[in-house]
Image (cartoon, rainbow, N blue to C red; front, side, top):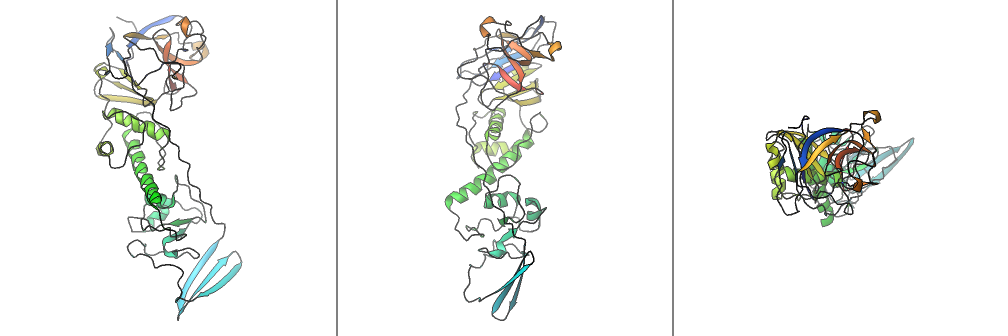
Length: 395
């Protein structure tokens, strides 16, 4: 029996642990084992004498990275207040800009815009001049937010996600003077009068769908250590990493691609009341860890009923592949207390890993020098020389 309580490790994905991770000092004793299998093989569970388990499975992380540039809107600098009065056959519009006042008279027999659709036009809107349909446009005032604007109206179609989508807004930032089209889904840009194209409609639908997915992911992963996603409707690397982790938890094929709105996998995720523990034989151990290299994610739990942590990780580069494992012992080696837990060895645990060894925070070793360790740089893609990196606070 080992004198030190072992930590269990299940590593899934095409795991590449950094040859280049080591430490110096005296051994503290074994704390677990680790194993890797071929990409198409099922997870393999290895249990130590102390009852802890380490498993590595292999996947793929070849999905392309998609980046979306946020839309930008140039706010108006004019401080304009408009009063519209109808008298006789003419409409008189008075516009005040600073100290200047301009009055114009428009003949209603020559309209410059189409009448608004009553089904999409909100009520109690002060029309904005100089746009295609002033009744469908709101001018942002200082201190206003999307939620405050949406809350003005009883029309449930005027929601924050819908306003974002209609105006191609990323995140929650809006600027004073900015014009917002709030008649959503009518096929018209009510600021300019341009017809919405199919691409515009698809983009709007995607923003709304991704925002709903981000909100759901934040709910599912709440309380397990991960920082919440920014709910902005933009599917970036972190959102796709979290989607991959959800797929892993639900037993779906792991992938970092976007999740299609209305798909079966999205329906499964949206219907879930909690995040399940990924199914693997490792969960039969008292303590276990699962690292999936397709997702670049780490799960940690206790037994079959308790998920404790979910952390982003960064595993090895293709040119520094992780050596496949088969019941390799997992252990700590020298806590390096005199260096705050940072190991800078160039000689241990394995000479073949040197001189690739670098600074590693509180490493847990397996296979003669590869390790799970804290690092200052943990991207969403493989970046190490074979180890699995964690952020310092997670390690």
